[in-house]
Each structure stands twice: as C-alpha cells, then as structure tokens.
Amino acid sequence: KLASIKWEPNVSKIVYGEVIEESIFSAMAIYQDADGDDYSPDGTYTYTYSGGTLAAGAKLDAGTYTLTVTFDPTDASLGSNITGAASLTVEKATPVVVWNNPPSIKYTYDGSSGPKLSVEQLSATASVAGAFTYSPAIDTELSAGSQTVTADFVPTDTANYKSLPQGGDELRIEFEVLKGDIQIDWGIFENGVFQEVRTPDGTKETPYVLDFPGAKAQSLGNDIPGSFSYS
Image (tube, rainbow, N blue to C red; front, side, top):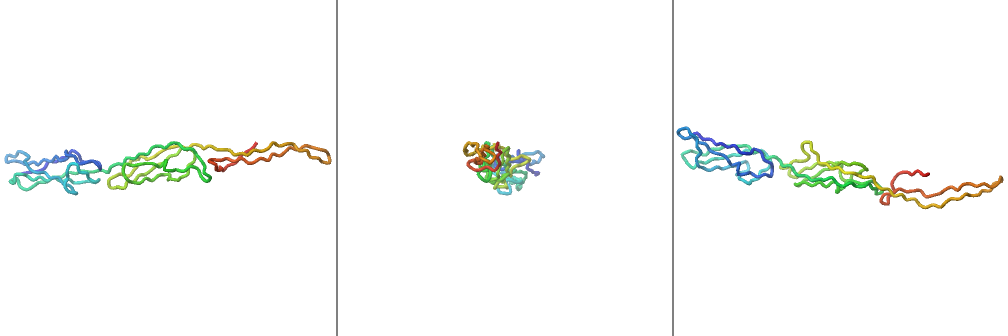
C-alpha cells in the first residue's frame, strides 16, 4: 500500500538555549486503503537527529540539523517502517551586555600624568563567560573634555554565542573629564622701601627692587607644568 509521512514542524528555527517543544512532534503517517482512501494507522513514531533521539525539553547546540521521524506500524501487514525528514536551524544566541555611562571625573595631575582609564569606566559585564577588549585601553591618559570608549566582546563559547557588536551596533560609553582645580602656592614677601644713595653730585633716592618667591601651580600637591605672568 502507498505510504508516506506528513510532517511540517511548526518551527524551523530556534535560538540556542531554547528547548525542543512538544509541538514539533507532529508527524503523521498516511496510508491508502484498497479503495484509495487515506488513513493514519496506529504505530510508533521515533524522532532522531545527528546527536541521537530527539525529545521534548532537549537543548541543541547551534547549527543546522536534519530531523528524522521513523514510523513503525502496529499492523505488520502494512510492511516495514517508513521515514520522513525536516530541517531545524539553531541560531547562535546573543549575549546580554550591561555597560552604563560612568559619572564624570575631575582632571588631576599626579606629577607625571593626568587621569587614566580604569576599571571604574571599563566595567562592562556579559551574561555569559568571555572577554572584553576596550578602545582606548585601560591606563590610557585622558585630557579634559568629552570621552567615548567602545568595546568588543568575544564569548568563550563561540560555537553557541555571537561576538559583539553585531549589525552596526556599538558597545560604547560616554563620560566627561571636567577641568581640574589648581592650587596656587605663592610665598609671602616683605614690602620694599626707597633707598638713599649718596653721590658726588648729591643724594638721590632709588626704588627698592622687589624680590619675591616664584608662584607654583599645584594639583594634589604636585607641581603643574606651565608659566606665570606677574604684574
């Protein structure tokens, strides 16, 4: 008798992490009786894929699979089993990354450089194991002004998870480096007086030349390079 399997799964594509649902097991064996009418006899359906038996609740790795269903009729007179096939694609999952804009920081000078990128700014986290690469990198010296940092994420399990960013999106933060405060250190000097200088032609007064200590500009107790103008 003519026999075939009708199987049109309700899904052909899922994402890694999603389970195989019961609704996918919907194959039906179709036989024709002596009058040419279709009917579905009793029997056992067995679903398999390249990794073994396919069952509800199973999780498959990302990839493209050929699913096979085998029908064994209870009535031996119907002959040997028949098979059918369907395709299922399991797409890589997209990790969830959390990376919020950090607060502004104030420019400071430690005697050799200004503020640097640190874990305070480079603090992205992902829902799966992996590694972030930041641009600019950690310990990059920053100037006052608006700052933008971008990142790439590569998951440890590259077979089942996508690397980020994808599709033109960006992993990025923005923050501000505010201009820093300067402390001026300028020592105390005494008032000057006029001096009398006697010469053969008489006595005249000459102004006192001020001699005062040079001023210093400092941040956190460290001298800031630069120059002063006095008046």
